[in-house]
Length: 445
Ligand SMILES: NC(=O)c1ccc[n+]([C@@H]2O[C@H](COP(=O)([O-])OP(=O)(O)OC[C@H]3O[C@@H](n4cnc5c(N)ncnc54)[C@H](O)[C@@H]3O)[C@@H](O)[C@H]2O)c1
Image (cartoon, rainbow, N blue to C red; front, top):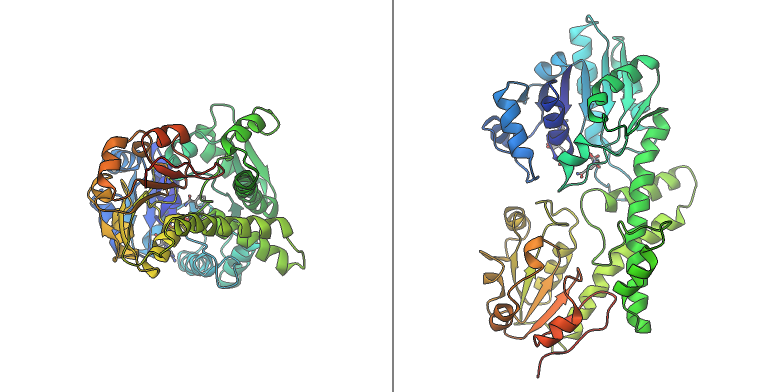
């Protein structure tokens, strides 16, 4: 099928590459000339495992191309996927300006082209509040009489595993107004669900809500375990043991129940707030989602207070080393990353900050140029008064602890991801603070 992807971000680019790989003919449109230039050279503007290889293969096969030209992109398509960002606006609700701008562009192009041999389908893939896909439909209809179908097709991929998630989805959700749109969506997605996982066709408003309900549930699990972890610290329980005891219950399971620094990234924070905003707009108080967000924000402060407690004389003149900048491993995405909040607070408190992340250093330098770019995880530690762990990258799991101790000025680790056993750290002579477990003292200060 001939497809147009509008927006070449984390979702648009992965979706485009995976559809092209199934034999579809895909055009990617963006308004960012830098991204299109990189993509035309075969370079991915984002880090996502497996994406570069998939792009190279499909560029070579001429199944995917990149353009800044709206007319070219919209003429090409039988199906247009809107994959632009829907960030939070000032009051937390979703900012729909990019989605609506695309809707206007599509309408104007449809009007220029006129009715063609087939009816185009406009698919909203961005995460949007209930009613938005119909607003897109109504906006296009207000500018052209050319017929088209509308669909909402929320995306569930996880950054870091995006290609696998897209290629082997647990489910595909399609919200449609008529059987023709349903048929188009089934045809497109059937090659991805040969494993028997369902394509769930439903009404548009329900499809829009599935995405928010799913993200809100996952965010809720993370805030839940963090609240329990903080309670464990007060009661002298160990969250790791509590977690194991609790997760052995099949009704609970063990996914998304890791204590830590709370969620970040471009989805959970904004989507939880958007649920609260959606509630407000219809006079309904989404108390649980508001609390999930509050607990998540507090988790960063809770961790920060642990750092401050280790420096009674303040942080002025101290050096803090950060392992991990990305909001989670296997991505370069630093949007809403807990590390960013903590580095900003460190700088504000007068500390020098050194950081290392395997793939997010370029993004970090753009956002916080005052942070020293370390060349590797050990270089990062040189002369630091403490190591703060913010992302659970694999290479941080089994470091050379003797080397770490030698490089740090003081053997202090504040671990926001519970990467190590407390006993091991104590034996190696570290002061080690983690989440939901008692701080151990191994140094002979
Ligand atoms: N990132 C994720 O893991 C993820 C997962 C599921 C769903 N989502 C949702 O998907 C949507 C996109 O997220 P993302 O992370 O890919 O965003 P992103 O910010 O990485 O990419 C958006 C792209 O859209 C482009 N764009 C903006 N306006 C445009 C226009 N008028 N025409 C053409 N291109 C335009 C931007 O230049 C940018 O390249 C959001 O609604 C998000 O909530 C994201």
